[in-house]
Image 1 (cartoon, rainbow, N blue to C red):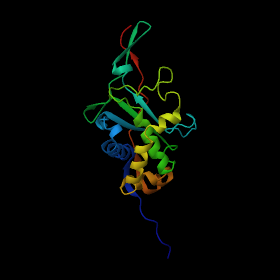
Image 2: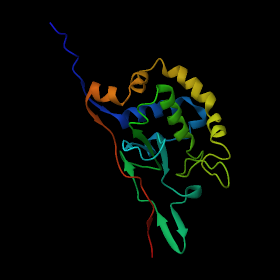
Image 3: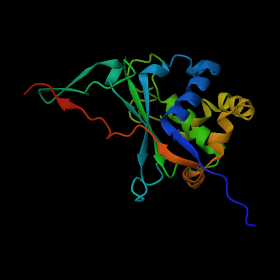
Length: 198
């Protein structure tokens, strides 16, 4: 008699799982302790078509330089539309891309999460962490940028092995769709500035 394959679990919310990991990172890693996870919305985007090159994750700040809610450019004022989640006004949106991010080894998934979190301004004001006058996001070197959180990443990686999050991060996109009947996530278009006066 042929053995029946196990029934898939009912449902998994990728945004919820990733938010839980981020909450634990913020709680355990002092350099990221300024982050209020309630004001960070985690979304899953799609790059199945291959567009976007090697994009695995992306942080979208919802304020401008120094946390300003408006930007004046060529005589016009711009603002980013308000985004709220569970009653909290969001300052950042983080996208993780399906399937590229989810098909990474768990160590690389964790590195991408740390990388995107480290882009958040130490003032947690809706702006990015500005690393230089010209190359604002990463400074003179992406390798140097990644080295700034490397000790915390190593320490958290060792901690993660003994948590339930390890099971989730170890699954690739095929595993997720095989194991769960429904794979859901928060999905929305990248928020963009709009003109608020003419």
